[in-house]
Image (tube, rainbow, N blue to C red; front, side, top):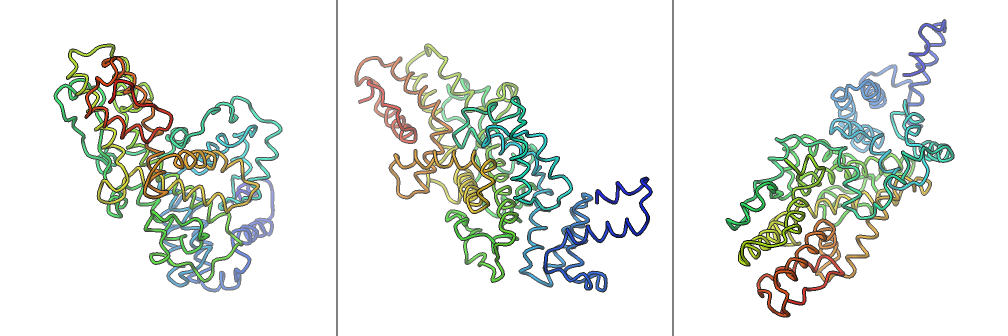
Length: 447
C-alpha cells in the first residue's frame, strides 16, 4: 500500500503503479498462491484472502473478517486464512501489537531503541520474525537509555511483568461488572475500616463469561482459529480450549509460518491475562489516583495502624483482610469452574510456551515473560500441593499477597507480644495464607 501512495505526485507512469500493485499482491500472498485464480475468480480462496488483507490494512476489520471467514468455509484448514483471522481478532479486541511488542522488548532487552522497531515493521501486515529480529539487532547499538529495559530494572515476578503491560487492555465499567461481583467484608469493623478500599469478587471463567466481554470475546477467537496449527507443547492442560479433543491438530500444520502463528497466540493470551489482571488488581478512588490496587491500599492502611480500638477490632481487621484475599485469589479447587487467577496463570503459561517454540533470535521479546515464569515455577517447587498447577497458583497468589502476609505477621507480633498469646484461629488463617509466600515465618506469638 505504501508504494502506491508514494507513486502519486511523483510522475510514476501507470505501468509503474500497476507493477507496484502486483508486487503488493505477490508479497501479501503465500508461496502457493494461484494468481490466475485471483484475477479469474473473486470468490476463490486466494482472492478472498488478498481482499481480507487489503481490508485489514485499511482498518476495515469487520470486512476483513468476512472475507477471511468466507475463505475458510471453502478451505477450513487454510493456515494463511487462520493467521489473518488471528491478526484481525487481536485488532478487534483492541490489542495494539506494536505497543505490546515495545513493552516486551523493554522487559527483555538491555539496549533496544524501542521507537525504531515498529517503524521498521510498519507496512508489513504479517509480523515477520526475521525482520523483527533484524530491527532489534540494528537498533541495539543506538539505544535510548530512557527507553531501554533499564527503566524497568527489577521487574522479575509475573505480577510485576503484567503490571508493566496493564495499560494495553482497557475494560469498561460494564466489562468489570460482568467479570466481577461486589464484595462485602464480614465484620462491621472491617466494613468501616476498609470503606475507602472496596474489593470485587472475580467471577469464574466460562465460555459465556468470555462471550459477554467484547475484548475477551475477540481474543477468544484466536484459539479457535489457530489451535490446530500450534505446537503440542503450547497447549495448556488447564485450558479446555487447548484440548486436542476440542481442537485436533490440523493435518496441514507446517513450520513455514510457525513464527506468526505462535506470536499471535502469545499476544492473545497475554491480552486475556491482562484483562483478568484488571479485576485481580481492582483499583478505584484513592487507589486509582495513586496508581495502586485497592488490595494494596488495604494492606498499607492495615500496616500503618499502630493500634486498634480493641484487640477484637484488630482481629476483625485481620480476618477480613485474609478473607478478602482468599475471595479474590481462591485456592485451587475451592470454587466451581476456572478462577481468574488460574486463567491468568494458564494464559501466561501458554504464552511463554508459544515464545519458546519461536525463533531463538527473538529472545529480546520473550525474555521478560520467560524469566518471570521460570521464577514462578521455582517458587512453586518449594510449595506443597496436589499438582504443579495447584502449586503454581499458590505461588502466583503469593506474589499478589506477599505484602499482606508481611503486614499481618508484623501486626500479630505487635498486638500479641507474648509467646503463644495470639488467638489460635487468627494464627491458623495466617499460616494458611503464608504457605503461599515462602520465607515468611509464623509470628512467635502464634501457638
